[in-house]
Image (tube, rainbow, N blue to C red; front, side):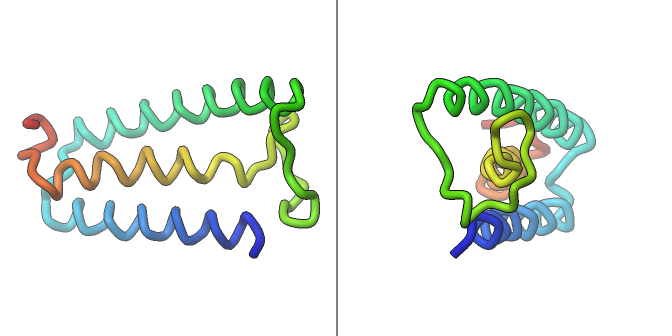
Length: 104
């Protein structure tokens, strides 16, 4: 299985949960903006730290399982997990108990 297929599964699940949260009216505009800001920050941090770790030789990717598209030395596939997490976690937060994205 390639990383693209595995990533597609994670992102698809996150998007389905997010759509459910939005359709139930649980995602406020403020929460969506906060999620977008958090996503941008997480993607920047992922780019920085993954490039540092790959450059330091801490890990590598099998070239037969990646597309070859990279941001620096980090394969584009590496960004799907933070993307899925940044979408999924706030969606689950509101679906599993928070009211209007403000309560615990």
